[in-house]
Amino acid sequence: MKVIIVALAFVAVAAAAAIESEPPKILRSESSQTPEGGYVFGFETENGIARSETGEVKQVVDAENKPQNVVVVRGSYTYKDNEGNVETVNYFADETGFHAEGPSIPQAPSRR
Image (cartoon, rainbow, N blue to C red; front, side, top):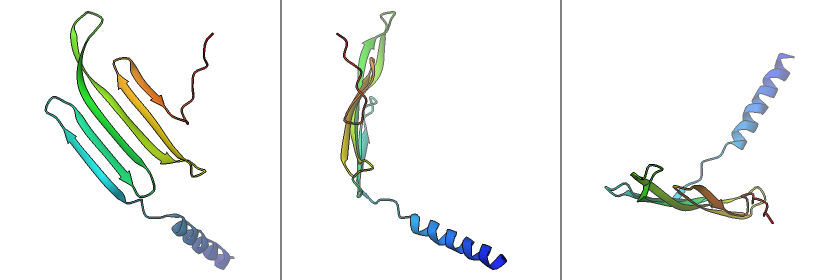
């Protein structure tokens, strides 16, 4: 009985080792920041994942008409879904909130 348990333990360890793989290599990585608070960054990996984003400082007025600095963000990310299809999501975020568009993002029903 002990031999069977030990053998099963070795099989489980071997199966787990076969599943683990190296993380994807980074093909490109860049980032920079401005003194005002803006930024640019992006990366791309060998398995098709990519992201790029920019942030720009913008002055808006709040509910009390006081000026406020906000960072307006624009970007996109790309990946392969479970079926191997390439998906790209574009987004922006500003004083109105976060907004994303892409095939995997649910769309609100249209009102008539």
